[in-house]
Each structure stands twice: as structure tokens, then as C-alpha cells.
Length: 426
Image 1: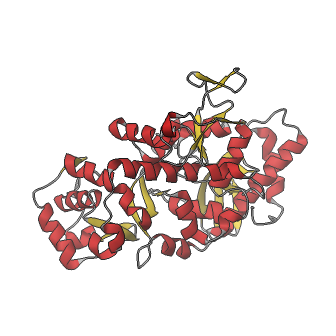
Image 2: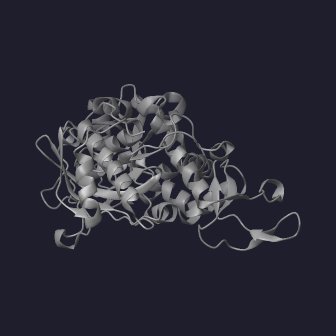
């Protein structure tokens, strides 16, 4: 509220918000494909990393979901490239983020430096490890002496603890991986000098990241934004200042169905109307979203669905990653991927590979209103298209479905899978 004047609140239907979100996230219209993976990363601001690899690793699946059958080598080059165009750091989680955003994470680097602890006590050998990276880098933990002490996965060696803390505080940077191992080098060798020397205040950092998150999400609640950049406490207060003061560049909106707003404001005629319950990127509201929808399975770590509460609010879709749930207690499968079609999450698939066959160990469909024959056929066709195109992308030439949740859709899906896929999933 610049100058203390409340900003007008724009009313959005839940459907309008959903379509704006899909366009902002790169799933609606052709504009999202322009510029390839590098431009996609800039638009998304952060792509989450994860160690699980089923069809591909999550950061590859994020690019495929938006761009179609982009070469996997091209994805890797766009994320980890020389000179560096991106680096790994903590945003929503461990993420690939654009190198241009290096200054915006200064607040987090300072916070880690002040704590001098994260998961492990920092060993006294940290200065020696930094000197080794400076003299020998780029290096992996193997080059530095090894990452493990021989116990469980969290039983890190002092070298691993030291180099990860050096990454946290910005003394070293990871700009690429080899065999999924981070490659570290000192910041002054990989971060452009103009970025390395730009020191922002905590308020400036949070303000900038809030704007990035808002543009990536399109329409978001305050909680969505806080989850995207993972701020709370004093940093959460800075987020509120950035939103209410206008510094984040987002505008207040009221989305119908997104929960009960706090309080109310008066309209021009004096009638009570809802207060804002969300924030939007003005560009997301400037024109009506148009174009074709992507049909694709999504990584559970994709920023369209990584926030479970937001996914349920926007899509009415309840999703939980069950990779760490005991096998006998899983409902949908190990690495269940939501399936997007027509701007809706129509179901989910638990994928695997058997040689050159794409295996859908379990396929589930979301319940639809009075699901008649035509609706069943449409859902089955969309699922078939998503499965066949994902199979082709990872080099499979056949699709096998082992189980379908909902007997009324098993036969339509089987029939759809016998027909060759049409189009590119847009």
C-alpha cells in the first residue's frame, strides 16, 4: 500500500486463477516454449532437484513437461553450462536457480554464516577445505577425500560437511554435476564479478525473490509465496513488507473459493466486499490466457504441484509422494506422477521401465461429474497420450499398464493405448 492508500482488489474466479497459473507455469499457450530450457528456468525462477530417478530425474521431467521431447543432454547443458548460467542453492528446496539471481540469496548466505550449523556442526578443517577447492577446483567430494564416514546416508565426513557449509555461505558454488555428484568451485571463479560484488540487504533480497515467485506462480497466496522462497519469522515479515508496500510488484486479488479472507474493505458504493486473499503478477492478469494446453505427466517436485495445499486449492487434487512410505502402505505408488490434461489434473501414474517398455504400474483417474461414456473416453485418450509421449521421450517403444484404479476406465484406456498417439501433447 504505497503512501498508505489501499490498492484496489481485483476479483477472480477460481477458474480464471487456475488458467493464469497454468500460463505462468508454462503449460498454456505457445509462448512458454520460446527460448528453450534456459528461458524456462528464468520464468520458473527455481527448478527443484531430487535424487530419485525413475524415468528421468525431476529437473529433466520439469523441462519435458513444458517443452515436450527436448533432448535430455540439452536440458543438462542449459542447467549446468560453462560459463555458468545457473547454480544450485536453497529456494523452495535444493534447486537450480538462474545465476543472475545470485545477489538475491545473500540474505540466506548471511543467515547460514551466522548460525554456523545446518544438520551438522561445522568442523575446524573448513578453512583447509576451502583452500583445497581454491587450489584444485573444480572438484567433487571424492577429490576432496570422500563424502561418507561409512554409516547411514547422513553420516557425512568432515570434508562433506565443510564443503556443503561453504556452499551454503557462498564461498563455493555448484554449477554442474557429474554422475549426480556436485562439482564445487570457488565463487570468484564461476560467479560473474558484477553479480559477486553486488551486496543486497535482507529486505531487498526477499523483495526480489517474492517478485520472482509471484511471476512464476501467476496467482498465489501469501503462504504460497512464503513456501516458494521458504521464509518465516523475521524474513516472513520482510515478505509482508514487500507485498503490502508494493516492492514485490504484485497486486492484491480475491480468488473465489480460495478460503475465507480476513476482514473486508468497502467498495465505492459502500457495499462490503471481500479483502484480498492472494497476490498476482500484473502480467498474468493483463490478457486472458489462450492457446493449447499441455498434456503430460508431472514430476511430484514440479513447481505446479510441489506445494500440496496449493495443488488441492487450485486443482482439487490431493497428492502425496509415497516414495518414503512403506511399500505395503502405499496407495498410488512409489513415484506417482500427476497427469495434466486440458488444464486439469485428470489422474496419476506410477511409472517404471522394463527394457524398452514404459510400465505404468498403476494408473488412477480423478472422479468426474457423472462420468459418462464420452467423458471416460476423453480421460482415457488423454492418459494414453501422456503415457505414449513420455515413453517415446525416454526411448521406450511400448507401453504396458499393470493396474487401473477404477474398473470403468480400464477398458477405455486399453483401447486408447492400442491407437498410436496423435499430436505433441500441447
